[in-house]
Every structure is written in C-alpha cells, then in structure tokens.
Image (cartoon, rainbow, N blue to C red; front, side, top):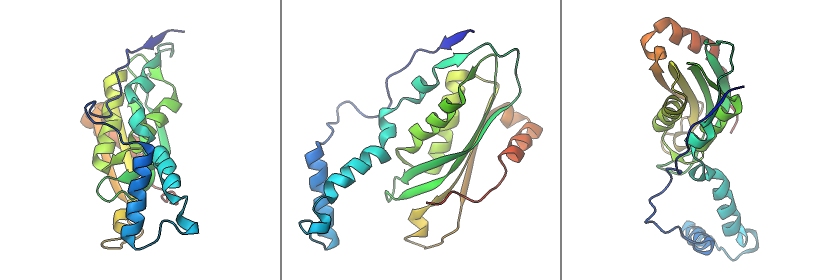
Length: 212
C-alpha cells in the first residue's frame, strides 16, 4: 500500500501576537454578562455557570486548535485505479454564528473525484468538524471545507453542500423557524460538468435537518 503524507502546516488559527485570556479572565467575563443580563452570578443556580460556560466554549470552538491540512495529510494511492466520485453525505454540523454567537445546526455533503489517491472517509468528517467548531458564517465554512480538500488531495474536483438552520434568525430578530440556508462550493470538474454536478446533488438529496 502506498501512502502519501503531505507536509503539515501550523494551524492557521490565531495571530501569534494576541495573548489568549486566562480561564479566570474568561469566567470573569461570563459573570459580567450574567450581571448585565440582570441576574445574580452568586446565587446557587449560577455560581458554577462561568466555569461551565468556559468548558462548553472549549468544546464549541475546539476547531481553532485543529489544522485541516494536517488532518488530510495522510492519503492512500493503492486504489486499483478507482476514479469515480467519493461522497460522504449527512455529516452533522454544529457551528456558531460569528455575528451573534448562537448555534448553526445542520449537515454537510462532501464529494471529490480522486486523481490517483484517496483519503480515509473519517478525515472528511473531521475537516468539516475542524472548520465548523469556530465562529463562522455558512458561506465561508462551505468554501473552507472545499478549498482544503482541493489544496491537499489535488483531486479532479470537489463539491460541498451545507444545509443549516441559524438560530440567529429563528430565536431572535425575524423569528422565522423552519428556514434552512443552503450553500455550495463546486471546484474542478464539478464546476465545469453539469451532469456530474447533478449526479452529486441527487446523491446528497434533501432530508429533514438534524434537531438542534
């Protein structure tokens, strides 16, 4: 089995000149928000909330510590000439809107056309996760997933469709529940070949969005 390992780059997370606040500072900020909301952070039900929120944020935004290029770096060339579409659909996606910091819940469908090498399917899901677990807008998230796969695997084409519900418009603002936003990014042959694009979209299909 031939395995290709693409050199990893350092995570493109943060400006190194920025100093990350301490856990204590983060918890103090949550206490300030609780006070601003009109409650008492010292009452029994809220006493441990700042620490809980800090731990939750470590999960919600774990993608800043992940390098999608490194995730995709290990690929396999022993495919017996397989060159048809590889599709991973219905990847559950949990992100947060960078404008209001409320959840974006949905799913991603990812496909690529191998050009001599393939990657483990779990790696595709991990790339979606790495970008989703950051503050995002859906358009950028969709492009980041597709661009990373294209950059590392150099396939003949990449297709990504993201369908999601945004709580910034379902629980606040216009209050329109049940609305799904759909974005797509087509590269290579998926952009130039309409029949290939239709085949991918038929495979992805339309099903109810995941529950929040």
